[in-house]
Image (cartoon, rainbow, N blue to C red):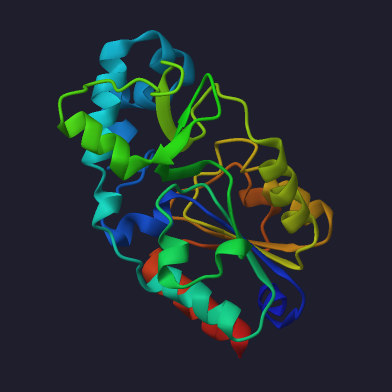
Length: 247
């Protein structure tokens, strides 16, 4: 029966996408009211080659970072439920596509969260090893530098996120694949499962024998692999599933 996966007592892998953070006031990207659905041009802000080539686009990107709702966002019931699962003694690893750090801010162990697309709170140079905080760089923007260059080499600065067309961090993707491969239960929560290699973690988990449970309002390319598909709102679905797992 479909419900039997809840009784598996091994490791739990969790892949989270933008949908888990919408209840915190952060819009998703591809949903009916998603950022890119409403404004397709906005997707260019996350495209690496366009960002490097267009100073005006970079200026717009810094303003978008300044105004990102994640600065004021707070973890919601779904984030809290995953913390409860970990604190109950289950071996849980979260692979998140999100850059908002809401899992860590909810209290989930930072060393058990794999940020496969990076985070928005740090800034890196594309030319050298310079790193700093987003807050410090936004202070430069507020002081009049619309597109602040790297203070070390003069290169282009960007958020420590993985943009479309940018090479993934190999250590991060290997860690994510290992977490998926060693899971007995793999929860995919709030992700369209259209962006690779993150989405392929579902296939890695299933191929290794995990039960895949997809919690998402819309169909995904991996639905056919799932042991169970949950369409109810994430804010109620995840706490319910965690309660059922913990029995």
